[in-house]
Image (cartoon, rainbow, N blue to C red; front, side, top):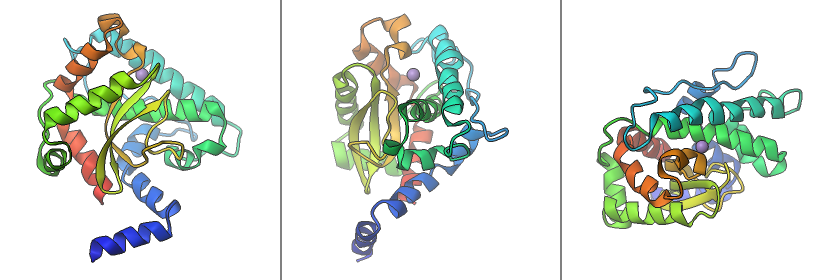
Length: 239
Ligand code: MN3
């Protein structure tokens, strides 16, 4: 009964309420991400050293990815919104109507969010899925290995640059992918919801170490997934 009521309430106020709910769950991430000074977005520090994810992700890739690529998204996002009616809006506010805004806001806003999300989703030593997320993975996909297979297919199947995602979408776990710097929080996403896992499959994320071997990169990435963070992402989506 309660579930039915929930579904009905989502159906009656489909866009604003449900999307707000998703975005509220990211308050913590956004607070860290935004660290605004005069309303500007800022590059967050990594929660580990650049060599922490060796040998799966090399130090030079991490350093360039963070200080050059992510930094450029932040700089260009600030440029894109500065002096416009979008200045001062949060990432979540931008994403829910991103289809109405200029491409630089979509590309750089997505780039800033996605990388901030990605850094936290990794840690030295990795681990295995636990708690409610482990149960949901098992009931949805069969096992963590079955999820991995499906997720890696999405990562390899994404033509050109983009991201693979595990999304909590209307209470269900779904594997998807997005082009460029789009993400499941955007109104343009095929699968909308709260990201639980996300893998950067732009060549800049792996080319120095893996060259054209995206499959090997995707396979090795599972050794550094921060499952505590993934669980937190999943639980925040359920609130
Ligand atoms: Mn990247």
